[in-house]
Image (tube, rainbow, N blue to C red; front, side):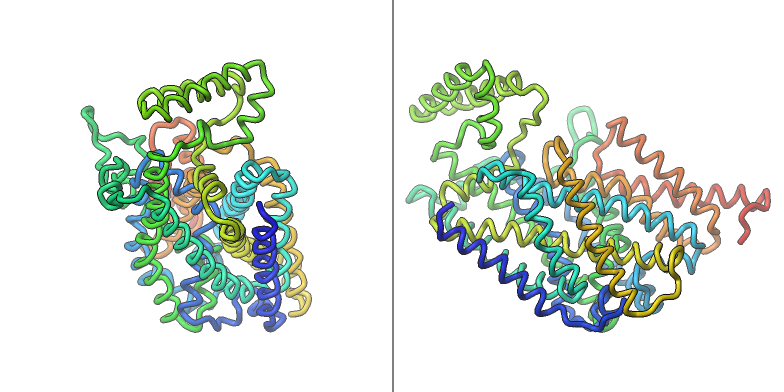
Length: 541
């Protein structure tokens, strides 16, 4: 990057840290640190919800997903608006009435402490791992394309935000997310404008989009042999599996529940959630459309033979160097001669040769497409702004996660098992140190998070899907099946979680369906086990 890009990047990041510290003034107790004294208006709740969900992975991986697989990933979000309505009807009133610090306090009131502890533990496990990936993912891409050391990038990506997250808690998180989202939207609009402007003069953009073969917004999932249950993104997995995933994520994952618990009142919480349901699908459609525009751009401008430059450097240190160079030369000649079929053939052969050179490497380069386009085609100054955008997007989701991880650790574990009675000041200081501890944990996970899968955005969602369904099933049982007691639901949750992991390991169904399977398993097993326990008079409390 140029000196100007570095200046813009550093000024933006330092400005966010300073703003977060400035906004961190709050009452020095748990209510202030974790819930911002329940003082946030709905629009700040909305931006905080969006900032928590839209990590750097969203902006790095989604355009690459559309570039290679088309727009069908947007179906993943089709169940989200329905989930927002259900959460506003059933979840928000309960959380608001009980004035809980974490979502899992409600489970102790409904069942027992054992169920609360188990559910909170599942959350801590899934969110801790996901946050580590959220740190690692942008660090990996940035280090590869910009030549940065991966370990130092992890430390910077995760370490700087700990400063204002640790000092200011939920209030600092919400206010910085507001500024972060504004910068992110501005940067994305600029990239979209330039992507269109860089297309050949006289090209009908709308026609090019329609004829790109990437506008597969709606797919049925049906093939000649019937429905493909392993198809990751179709209208049914999106509406049904996406609904259960969104219901669990926004209704039971404390990284999101903690955002709308900061609202002034129940009405403000609902407004933030409902507006999120309205704007999320168009926002994701726009981000994916950037990938389609980049695909159209590279239809006339020569794309690199492979987008991950670091992998090429590593492969050129092997005995396959000469073969790779010959294939790259042939690819360039074919593209310059407008022999598209031959060029694509040479690209496939190049990838196959890379696999021989680096047999243990994951060669999917979708995650590098967006940033490669930015680095090679955007003017000086804007590159620094986009890199800053990726940092800010990462910080927005990670900061909320660290705050929620600390909240559940303090409220659901420390104050129950270690120090139930403590002063407000000691609780506040303890919360800050737990935030720091979780930040270190997530950075450590990021340091070891190699070979996480074909798509970074899929990796995070797979981790969530392994746990979200069971967590949701516990909450749905608590809301809707009043006669099921604590022992039955706890047993159903443990068995259900084991079954979900086994199904995932068998690789017989798309990960999105695991959310629905996990929830239904807890409900069905809960009913069956309660009937058995009633017969033998077990677990009647």
